[in-house]
Image (cartoon, rainbow, N blue to C red; front, side, top):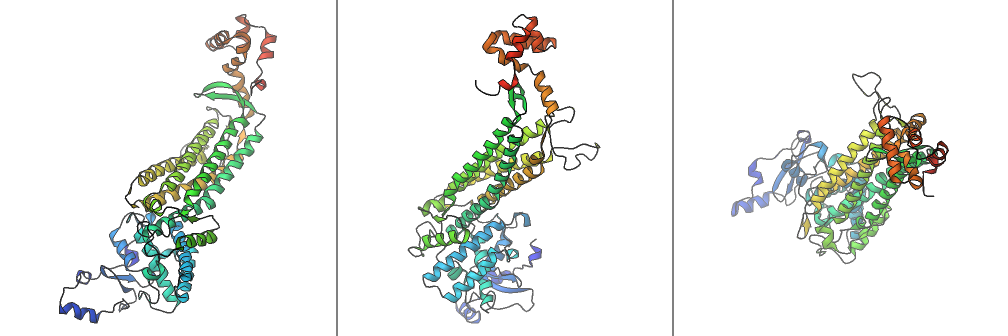
Length: 504
């Protein structure tokens, strides 16, 4: 990955500060105050940060601070890059900030170029210019500067200037105006999380909810035996069994929505520690309003910027809601695959869609693969929540420094849950069939139908019937008559599964 970026350090002497004295003064005269020198070959240009010169690939819009981060954090490679939803969220925020800064006096020409460049970030046109990994500074400073450099250089290009010159658009003075990484990154975190929830998670959960609800209604008249502790219990309908899954999804979506108000609060305007140093009165409110307009979501400025920088309780709460959904999906998928186990040696009450061959050695075998995908996703989301919990609990003083890790896992959970819900609904749930013959057989053989006799002959006699029938391999009716507890007519009148589905 890093080799492909064509990044090279200059000799170490160029990275060291010049010694004091006349030589230093001479250097100052010879070196332009802003790096505009282009390399003799076309593969890279020279840019500066406060540590010195670095070679930057000539075909990239990022600058020296981004290059330095790729050199300092060679962790994980391409798969561990900052999630694109965070980059897009940064584009939205930087665009909003430029609009507001223009209201406060930023040169309209500069603001307009920043807005155009930010729109390209939002549209994904510049994705190749964001090479940094999640595992960097815990404030996300390198990614904030990556965005600032890309937007600055693209804006410079739009205005006809030289890449790397920081003129006429400076990454700090203009793109990052009235901002700090400490409030910019959490702002992008919240924009990204809320957007992913609305575009991926909630639609996916709704689709699965609706598919399960349709099956609950379809199976409403199919009476089956219930199971508690994995053992036979009293009857219910297959529709009632599925209705529990529907309700779990309904509650899950409600929990997500209940967690969103905190996510809608933006840290922008808090700058370095929450005081709002180097910003303007009203900046925070105006930026939040702009972001709300750009996204169509009800973002507002956080009422307390100190909390917004130092803690990420809102995202921990959102992750917790997703963790609960993972628990729900684990239960639902396990139930469905166990009810569909077989085809001849399992419960076999459900017939699951056959989507692909299941074995490389056993011909004809078909497995509940969608259920397996759901349970794996559930396990991953539970693990993500552990990481988010640890990260959220480690805000020290005025800044939480687990920000990139937290948002990586929150976004991963939202995406996985949304996608797997759609996959499970489309490739499994809508095609589930009830194996009525098998359901009826298992129900008729169940000893727990004896529970219907409790009001008539008492618990102890009913238990005697069940235990004796189980021991002798006989039916409940045969055993009840043999023990003399009731007649055949009484048994037929009192033991009716359809009358055992609810209160009298």
